[in-house]
Image (cartoon, rainbow, N blue to C red):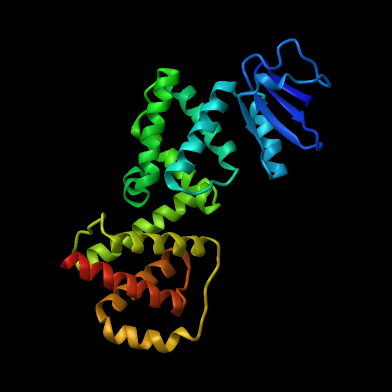
Length: 280
């Protein structure tokens, strides 16, 4: 392995036998080393292989100003999140999450606290990711002797959800806001409290998540085949269909978005199941 670039004493960019690039880390791995020299492979503790060239370049830039201990923490968090969720995260989280944690700790030490305006919604809609965020706060405290507020667990959760859905943080905030708005319309329309531990609530929230994605991605599913089924459903589930119409009016007024019939169909079915089970 030949050293291509040295970020600091503990991190370098190398070329392997196949001329592929990797970022490797290890205590003192680059001490008294120069580019073009052979690397002592026995000192390698962690290896980063990012398939996206753009993300790889940004990660290399990150390495130039963020200390290696934050990079190592980020890697451990990502592995922990993937294992807990049983899903792979988009490589972009190496940039967004590590940069955020570094900045959050720096702000906290400077006495600057940032409130998370949608923390309550994050706790409701992304329970698993938020619990991961709380455990990440423990990891940060163990390594840096800094206890960040729960607001940061919410921010961390959003970065994880972003990496699952391949959305950026701004879109995730908008998606979460729409989910909250629609959820509240249903809640107040039927004057009910949801059982947030039920499978019906989980399915409803999952549907809203992808529905909101389509809204902000301008991706409308139009399927005329669903029209006949919608006619049946709106007669059978009158109250739920009227609620969907209220949601449609709100989205048209607020976001200039028209709900397609297929979306009305599935939203009506999800609301009917949710309300029926909640009332039961």
